[in-house]
Length: 163
Image (tube, rainbow, N blue to C red; front, side, top):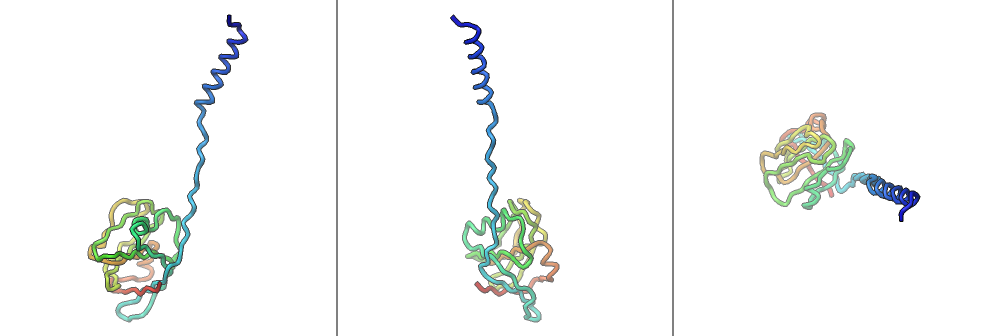
């Protein structure tokens, strides 16, 4: 026969188990490790008309499928004289989007002869709208937004790469 003490204990134990089972577990928040810039080469932009260098950048090179798909995603900043050069094995019309890219970018499209053939200024962070080269290219250079205008980059300018 059950007495009040045993019944109270059972009710208390059941309530304790129920409350602790329904209690929200504290989720472990994983803070991603910031992706650091890794200098893999130097790129110089030359004015086509004067054939004179006007900008020198330290660059990362994206030349594998994974690197070209990821690009500058998940980065919170980039120094002014840094950039990422995408090197494609084929000359084709290439498109980019800003999914998971936190910083606004200028995107410079460069043909197989290393001449600037088009560019897109101020690509919006996190946008999934495609940005196309409009013409066949083999290289794409991403730099901080506003630098195409600041540096006066023009169609016809050319690049030189030192790995």
